[in-house]
Image 1 (tube, rainbow, N blue to C red):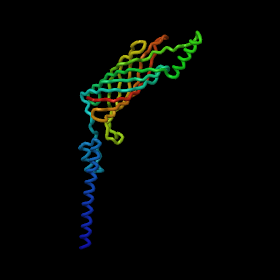
Image 2: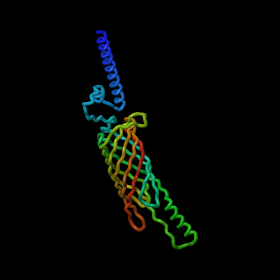
Image 3: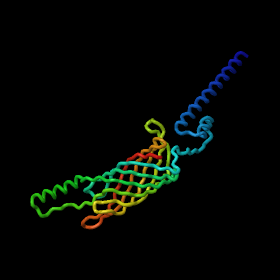
Image 4: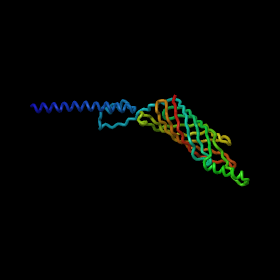
Length: 242
């Protein structure tokens, strides 16, 4: 009887310890999930700790983008186009978010231009030939961009959350965009088409960091006629939602 009582006492203590440990673990797990933006359903699943129960839960977006305005600034570089030019831009944007999936925006870019190494070589050779009294030399004709204004539509089909350098949990949105407008060149104004993709990382409910890659197409004008110019623009920027 004494041995039986000892055995029952041991089993009872073991069950109590296991129950306390399981409750503590579930509470700890629930707390960690809450720091990831966990909701009530996830917390209940963690507390239940039922390995046979499989459920798919999609959490709501932390950033409300219903009928909101987002202001942005960005810096970018342009690849492609005229081989004699390298171009950078500073930009500003205004986007109106109808909901988390769609927005309409206006973009303005101011361009800065410089000669590439190939461009400098050709111009230096032309200057040297002119200084030497030569009659046969080539000065390349360049039609460089000054600024552009365009309207775009954005579609946000994918969103998620990520650990932002262990500072906290940030929401991100991947989006597609397309639009068009006008680009002002040294020769005058012409139409512009653009399409691309980007990702916005929401560091707070009002502040985002954006990375964007866009294709641009327009026609410039040189002495020999118009040319079809295709470029790729990469930008980084900040957005502030009001």
